[in-house]
Structures are given as C-alpha cells and as structure tokens.
Length: 448
Ligand code: SF4
View (cartoon, helix red, strand yellow):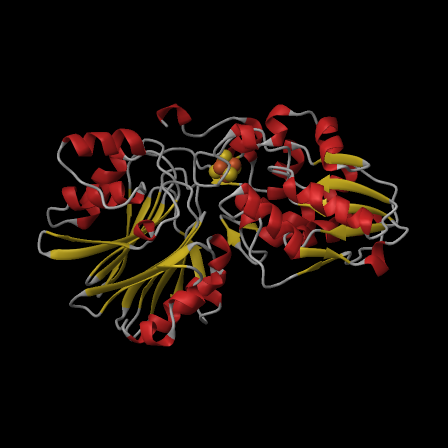
C-alpha cells in the first residue's frame, strides 16, 4: 500500500514529481519522499505526512534535476517511523543509488538474517532495504544484471523504481502483483503506480510494465529486459475493488468500469426490495450506479463525505480508524428518513466502518438498512502489500455472513460471489490474485 513514481526528462522535474505524488496520495498518507539527480549527484528529501505538507516550496526548490523518483507510504512492513520513509538512498562503490518500492517481500526475514550474518547493518526495518542492498551487492558495472541477480533471490510482490545519477529503472515482479504503468511526457518517460499520475502531467499512458520486466531509461532512450523466470500473472484484484482511484486502468482493467459491472452483477446475485440505493463514498459510487441501473431503484446520496479526511482503511490503529469513520461520513437525514435503503460498499475488512455507518443511518431515520458488498468476504491475509496481515482482524475469517450481519446491525447482508467479481474484471480469473478471498496464493506465503 504505497505509491511510486519515476520521471526521466530533459528539464527540472521537481514540480512534476510533486504533482505526480499528490495524485498518488490515496496510496499512502504516512510519509513521502523524493530523490532527484542533476546528472552528477542525487539529493533526497523525505518526511512524515502528506506530500503537500512535506514538500513546502522551500524544500522543493532544493531539488533540481531531470531524473527523479518519489514515494508515498503506508506501512505494511516495518513501522511508521521517519527512518522507514522512502525513497532509500545509498552510497556504494563510488556512486549513489536510490530506490522506491511498493509491495512486500515474502522472504524478507530470511534474506535479512543472512545479510546480518554477513555483517550487514540495516538503517530501516523495511524489506525495501534488502532489495537495495542486494542490487548494490551484485552491481559490478551492469545494473540490469545486478537487478536480475536480485530478482533471483527476492520472493514476493514488488514494483520498484531505481535511479542512478544518469539512469531511471522500473522493475515489476514476475507475477505482476502490484501495479506499475509507464507513459510518455513531452520530453521524457514516466513510471507510476497509477496512470492518473501520468495524465495529470499531460503525458500519455503507453503500457503496463510487464510482469518480470526491467525497463531502463537513459540518454539513449528506453530499453526493456525480461527476467527469465517466467511465472503466471497474478494481478491484485483488490486494487480495483478498493485501493486504486476510479480512473485507474491497470493491467487492462479500468477500476471505474470494474466497480460499475460489479454493482450490476451484485443486483443479479443479491436483489433487494428497497426505496433507495445509497453508495458509501467514494469507491462505492460506481458500484451503486451499477446496482441502481440494473435494478431501476433510484440512486441517492445518503452520506455526505468530509473531503478533508483520509481513507479509514489506511490508518495505522483500530482506534484511529473508528474515530475516522465518525468524522468522515455524515448521513443526510433529509434523504434517508423513513426510507428503506440498500447501502453499497466495496468491502468489509474489519467491520468497523459498516457498523458505525449503519447505526448513524438508523439514527438519521432510515427505516431499513440493507448492505450489499461488491467484494466477496475477505477471509485470508494478504502477504503481498495490502494491510490485512492478521486473520484475527478479518471478521469474515471467523464469522458466518449472518453473524457479520448481526454484528454490523444490517437488515440483510450479501456479498458478490468470487465468480461474479472475476466476471466483472473481464481479464480471466487465471490472471488475477484473489487470495484474500479464496486462499489460493500465487506465491507460497509459508516463507513469511
Ligand atoms: Fe491483492 Fe488480495 Fe492478492 Fe493481496 S491477497 S495481492 S489484496 S488480491
């Protein structure tokens, strides 16, 4: 649960990095950073907080160069501390190297223990530092070979941008679990976790970085290399269920269209006799539109969002998440009073948000509150970079649907089926990771 960006251009890119990172802010709000090269040396500035707070104009002015990478972070491995902010920057063999990573390594602890036995000391508690260390260890003048050697040893989900003083490199793990797209700017190349970062800079999306691909950009242009160990694609479906922006098109799935199709399918699988369809903003909107279109039941805005609050799922503690729900969504009593409503949300992970919302809607006068979820029950932990690490926090792992319904206080509760969700994706279930729903992990999590 991070966002990464990399830009190679022929003029100063500090503002492009700034705007691009702002565009990826929904992917992580704890910390952010940028490294930039003027062709001679790399400078890095990192900090805790939002991009707009960390990169005040005076800080941005310190960063001048035409190659750069950036990162917004939510901690899934390691803690939420300033020493874990990214990009990482290392000095080795007479040169500087910087790296931003989105994903989780399954074999991090094993690799770290081995490196520590070899005398390596770590400055962070994040898996990304192991990747950086391995790349520098194997770099004997050929950075692509060094990355391939690293890829032979690291197991898990990783989308990475790496930079040297004169090169930008993008790498995606052989399963393509976490997203990474690339595009053209007027005089350069851009990589980002989501295409919106390309589009807001006036660039054109060209393609996804392929699973197992290494793309190098330097003064001679773009060069693509494939890591030879072929594996099956396993794109994270949860990106489209919840995490990515509505305007994301990743691995041939547009998140908005996916969500709308999910709503239509959900109506067919779980119809409901109500007066209004009410979305949970923001990612519930497209699905509610689909549910409303397919059913003919009017769509109504029954919850008003405080647009200055962050996303509730990506707050570090349970207590903070509970407060955030209350602050974030306020029921519109003029709309819901005396109405039977179906509330459309994208997922129930811990149940906190749903329970509070339903209670608040009843307090506002709703006669019945039914709930329809456009993801199947989340029953299994994610080991690939989405924050569902412990099964004990997943209510669907230990409770039946009816028990969950009772807990959240809904009149009825249904989830889309795994088949329905897969159908909505339209790229074939064999190309997707759905492990948090079906427990079929594309990479064995036993290495954890
Ligand atoms: Fe995405 Fe779930 Fe797979 Fe994790 S387990 S990568 S959240 S689909």
